[in-house]
Length: 414
Image (cartoon, rainbow, N blue to C red):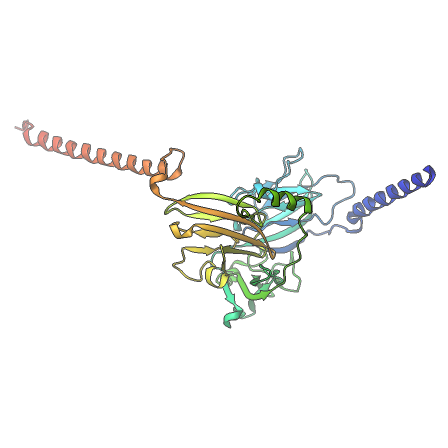
């Protein structure tokens, strides 16, 4: 291939890339902004991350600003930008309970909110620095507290629809997750969120299908929202079986080195997934998270060779559970005991990805440190008790002094 042919190929490739960029930019030209601002309804479960695209904007606008209001027409509006280019936020750096201004990011005109909480529910506007709005969303974040679990293998059925006159309250389920394990019996589930249908909804909100929005939507009047408040989100669980994908063979050179190192004595144990060690104090609680997992992912937990199925270990199945899995796929161990020692494996989307070797230390091995929050709490209680005893002691002596003075004080009356 000569130089002329190479130059032509590079020119053609550059033309294709330019054409692709132009096509992406023309999306906003082909999507006209509505003359009357409407709200698109979107519902998510707590602790999920979601993206709101700015589906339209004028061609002359090169940067967008996102705004947040709790209620339509509220005097308090949050501006979700610093006007100087926000530092990108990564989901792994976001903690539960952080303020929304810390848990968001703007990328390619879209708003990303990480680990959303019920208090993040409200109205989101895409606009300019001057406050001109192009597109808007009505976001409903439903709490996982009180979530109803339904196990199909036990013959259980989802909640039935509720009817209150012309109001219909029901559950809309998402797609089934992949099987959470492979090669053995696993589980898969689907999340169901609360929705309602009524002809009395606000006309400013888009309703697809007609007259249907999520239960926490701002389109729902207060009296209707109160009737739907008892309809909690649902989790539908069933068994599944999925074969494991064949893993790539380890390079022969690596195996040769491994065999050479293990010639003396027995071959050492080689973990199939990364193992992290953690030492926990006896009698204290522990929460283990699966790396890279989100509430909508298919996540499973094993302890050594024991499978921790949701039918037995899901939060709320038994009120006295000491070890359980919450709706955010975290493994909880309350009041750690010596029998909790072992390796806890984490599955994500049908693949085992990590392990946690848990060691339990007796109280005698633990050194008291002022950086420990429990130590500080204990010292605070001791200090409060000392202050109360001091106040009682002084009060008693003051009362005795007053009684003594009034009893022996001379009478100046005639």
